[in-house]
Length: 215
View (cartoon, rainbow, N blue to C red):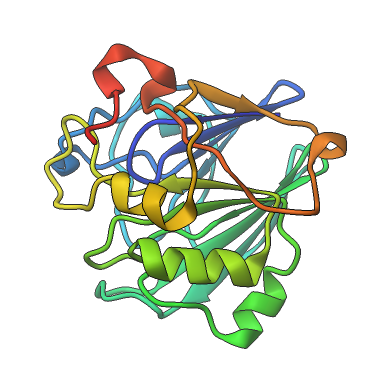
């Protein structure tokens, strides 16, 4: 499986010829939504999908429920732990034998029942930029509760972003992560370690110069 980040909460998951695009950023964010073909498009439900080629042929998931599309299992879980007007949706995605949890625009720690539902994730995509979402300290507390093999931070300040968010630096200090950003993550289930959580920093836009972190 390959995971690429396109800024904010937007990720592209690829495995076995299947492509899953999660939460393309809105234009008001200042970021350009990626025009990528995908088999499955996952939206949080607190944002309205914009017209564009990236959603025309994809199977769209935009709220809580259980879905199975082309061998990809998706569980959407409603969660009111956010300052936004509408409920945030958490997504657990099982693809190529790997369980990925996308926390969306989560603003507070999860309740014990939600933690139980999301039990034993391999990879967690976690907001860290503060404001209406988790800040670095709250994110690390939740990460320690979920105990994934890998965490990829999202929803922090990058070049071109018009939304006010914290930079990556507080999270690096809080987590102790020291590895340099990489364009994408390629991972197999058999390679995932269970002993400790690894922090992986991805460069936005697949590592293109336009998306380098503003730190």
